[in-house]
Length: 320
Image 1: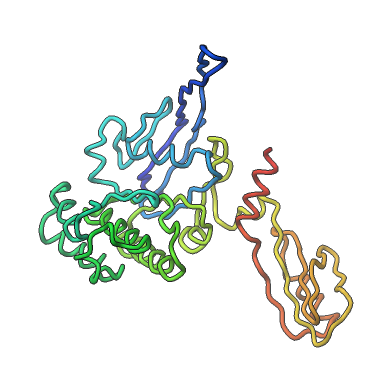
Image 2: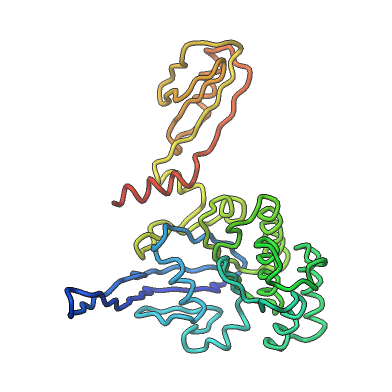
């Protein structure tokens, strides 16, 4: 049986009317198509990366999924609900975290913000205590509960925002740049918590981010949007072949030698006895490894995957 689709879009469009001044007295109206016929489904329990350059349509899509914006065309459902028509009902089924904005009350202690959230969502006392304890424990919020939100660092506030979005047990969690501006330790803590949340509670997560390490560490599936259109939807590894990426074979030899010569690979760097050989991402490394081992005095070798950010940049360049 196919997994239940918790999020479903079919031919969804969003067109904005933009007016600009032409000359001294006249204004010209033109249409900007921010989202152009997107269709996809996200099954219950999936963690999906939704990425693209600035202005590609990511945030517009999220705003339609939360009911903030109404689609100009197409069909959209979240947990069987039309977000634009039943926004209040949908609010009890989703959680939203925007890295650039907070849902917490700026001058109140963190725990008071959570208390207000409990009343807004009418969360039963026992369920509220259980969810709050889990978030406080795993996001290290215990020492921050009495601190006014305005005094929290960006990393502390982000952890506080994530907890606030989960107090009512949402089916879907939308994350828009959840690790922006965070240090390495805070990023690791947030990613670890999200991984546990998905594995233990089956929370569906749609993640938009410019930090591709978020995608690499959390998502098996990734969707790429460009100019309002979905240009890739599939496994993370499949991006490499679509973007015409290259993998790297790092070879450590017993001594410094002339650049290695192999069919199907090229040397891109030599540093003493270590050499870096690039080969197509879609090709198998096994024949290259076997040939190096047979022909050269080998000490060690490793295969490095291409940087996903470079792969996506190639994808955009190819569509330009």
